[in-house]
Length: 254
Length: 312
Image (tube, rainbow over all chains, first blue to last red; front, side, top):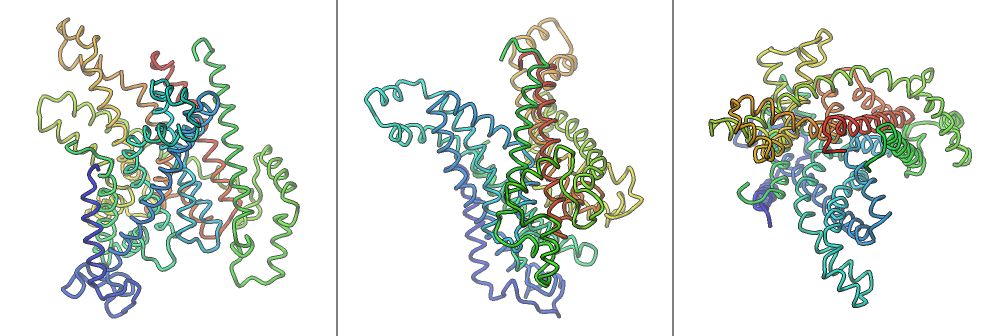
């Protein structure tokens, strides 16, 4: 696998810290409001005295979970659609290419914002679905490009000539050929999803209990003058998450 | 695709774009009406009385058959209207959105300017500089700009430069003026610059090996001339493509930045509509963004073809 170890390391550390920490990220202890980092609260406290280490680790894990799940789903959906259309060729392939090109540069964040806002109490599932609406496009595009190359290759023709049913050709040959480039795209897409989710939360459309990377940054911005450490924790956690997920896409040594 | 006139291609692209906008409008329309939850509850809140909700339903024609509503919606669009804003019922949603466009357009323009210059510059240094240190630094900057999210570095930089050092105006400062615009544009331009830088680096690396550069070198041109006059223009076409591709992300970033620095613009309209659950305005935002995006994409492709004959 490409550079997966930073992500695994971060997840392992976050899970350990979260479990080891008795503090509940939702627990309000007013006397600790915006306390600076100390031995009792290694990262300090935020609004309402919530322990920032607990909030940061849980928010990090939640963000990573959503981003990776939606990215994985988009990979499966997009690669399958792209491989199927690429295998058929002709109108189907051209139409899908056009659609993907349009979707990829589309202001999908604005669309996601509007759609999530239309729901009275947006849940994580709503956010995930809305983000997935456009996330599959890059994968389909890559699969289409890959298929254009291998369609003419001997082994595909041979499989067809031997009378293999189209579904088998798709599953056995087309999709596996498209997977390597799709894996590279996974890191970029997951990173973008993580940031979009955080941006939605920053604007107020995150989880109701406020434990999310975006909400943490929002809190930090609100207490910028009085307690800058809150922002540093939020921005740091968000950057750490984004960078480690992005590393999934990088080749070793590049 | 060869042989079609420029005008013909542009027309075809705009036609496809129109279809995209129509599809988006339809998706948003049906999403707002078919999503779980009563829209009147969303707008008026859970405490609304039955009478208030009934009144809102009547005003929004929510009890009409879906098809009738859809047709009315489409007819309204032809007149450039998307229904009255719920917060300011005297004004149509689209005019509320369009009014905010100039501010966001200015911000976007400044960002594109900064992003292009910084990106191409970094790309050039990372390929052409004689100092290994400069090359590696430029490359690291490009990677950094692409990995660190805007949402993370913008508040921190704002804190450092605005709150601590007072070099730039504070957020929500009404007299922010040009300094404020330049600062906001610079922040927004950095991620864009990273994408441009990556493209510039790839294009220039390719150009370095190309025959026409070798000819220039053989002719004894100076290093500066080779890179600036001969190699750099190859980036022009791809630059247009990258900018068009990054437009969606730029708009998303503008929404976040306008909320962060409390500047007027499309982002603020969107966030206010969000808070008030002003569905017609939200719908209008999506429509206007989609239309704008489609037009810019079409123009971008034509511009690219005009600049770089190889792309035709």
